[in-house]
Image (cartoon, rainbow, N blue to C red; front, side, top):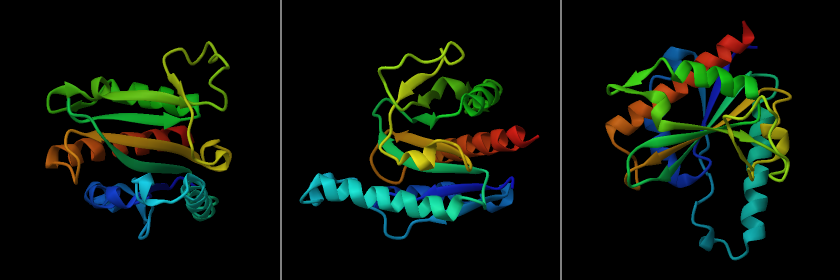
Length: 195
């Protein structure tokens, strides 16, 4: 199975941007999982943080059941905020995926700049206290709230993609193009890993 799935709308505030980024995904051979009733990023809406975390975990476990056995790569799109300009973090447990993406990004230009200058690659780890392997010195370690069964890479490659927008909201046309280009690069790596 060499199919890629783009997940949008885990948080309701991210759905509009996700839909704009997902335009044209079919032409690339990427399926889209649109989460109609995601969670709000505003944790203060929840009386107890435990319930927020429980709902989010359940949402990801349901998503995992839809991915497993059907897709080899899952791209989980989110948005954040960075006044300095559009940039991105890419999260993955698998060094082979990060290495491939590092290589692909070195050769891609967007608006006259190397895409790699606007993207930070991060390796998901179980324990921040454990030092990364010598093979992973270029990737910042990070933890995630996403259930381990989703990001551990047993059934498919999981890649978290956080696009930081210069203004809160749906993002500009350039922001969407930047995100689409990154999704395309991640998809390209997914195909290369199957070769």
